[in-house]
Amino acid sequence: MALTWRSDEWESYLDLRTGEVRRRQAFALRDELEDDELSVDEVENGLAEGHLVHIEPPPSSVEYGWMTEFVSSVSDEGLRDRLAVVLDGRGAFRRFKNVLADHPAERERWFAFRDERLRSAAREWLAEHGIEPTSTPSRGRRGS
Image (cartoon, rainbow, N blue to C red; front, side, top):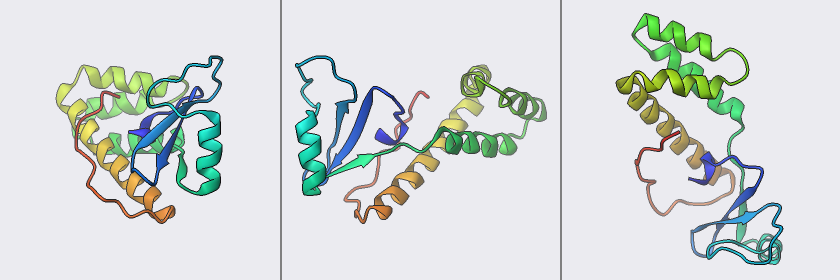
């Protein structure tokens, strides 16, 4: 999902003609493009013509907020306290994932929690851009 892919190297765009998410390497140092990759000219033309919309993932602060919200819902007090501690300071995302790796049931609950927040963010993004969704996003789990 383009809303989950934060990268300084790649940019994602929604093609309003096809409904496909297309991507472009932000700092391409090569002439060859991958099959689904957009060229600089295609992006510029698509944006100017209005059929491409840049997809900007939510800032990390939003996902951090989801993690703190999730932590407050953890019923195991020891795990809840441990997760609260790992959210403090640099590396919080990695430490959070590492702690959940030792608690498979809570890890699965986190994936479901995060997926619901992402679906909501996607619906909001579409509404902000005046785009009517044509299908419901899949509920497949992501490993992040």
